[in-house]
Image (cartoon, rainbow, N blue to C red; front, side, top):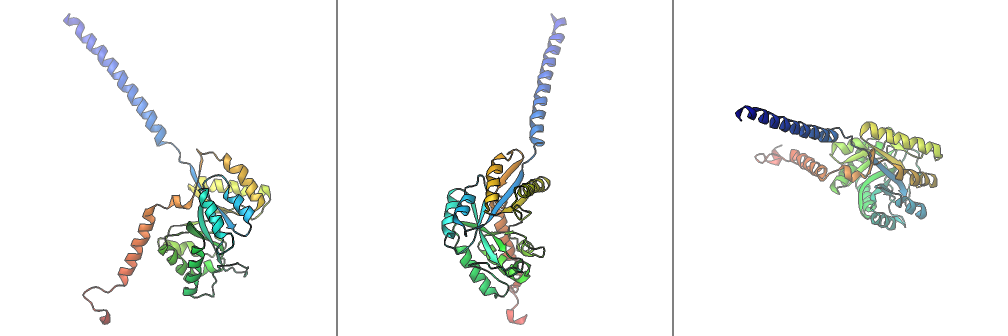
Amino acid sequence: MMDGLPSVHASRRGASNRRLKLSLLLLVLCCGTTAFAVEPARLVLIIDDLGNNYPLSQRAIELPGSLTVAILPQLANTARLAKNAHATGKEIILHAPMSSLHDTPLGPGAMTSTMSHEQLIAVLRDDIASVPFVSGVNNHMGSALTADADAMLSVMTELRSQQLYFVDSRTHANTVAAERARELSLPNLERKVFLDNNTDEQAIAKQFQRWLQFAKRDGMAVAIGHPYPETLAFLERQLPLLDSEEYQLITPSQLFPHAAWQRAEQAEEAAKASLTPPHHIAAGEL
């Protein structure tokens, strides 16, 4: 009887080892799949210029997916469109009119390079107040004003105080808007692609593909389109076809956790503290 025991133990050890190897293999396969899973590229799509044409603006609001609508301020349809967009789950930003190098007419609520700091802030506050459910701001036109460092500092400081992010539409290469936003730790993005400077369908399709390619390369890309019939028809067809495993359509707010505002507030407090005289030195002695 004793002679048979080692072989029984060996058999049991062999079975146990095989079970252990199988468990380890399953664990590696499971964890390996998770470890090497590719995160989808993030797409931010903003539709500008909502407000002048109500039917086309409403059609833009009804586009499928998690996208952002930029609404012009102080127009007859401004509040109505914002409320409609909010009801459909869209993110809403103020499309703030800013002066251009070509003196293009801007409509109500325009901010210009000739305004004082106080005037700029007064107009900006009125613009923000006219757009319900606003989460952020981007510039309408603005090739002149976004290149004005002092004006952009005034704008970004006000946006930080109201906890509104900024998207630089980059209507001119000389813009300093995003730079000023970063200096203040204000959550911000920059436009990568305009979809419809040319409204030919093939041109829009080419820009759409460039947007996808930038997102794949960089992990995220911002595209701006407009409520043109050609653009809307293209997006109505193409957005539902986006592969959810490759691309994720998101809003800017999804990129900016609450901690971003905390960092901005901390930077503001630090800046104030640096200007405050030490408690043991009288202000008049400096």
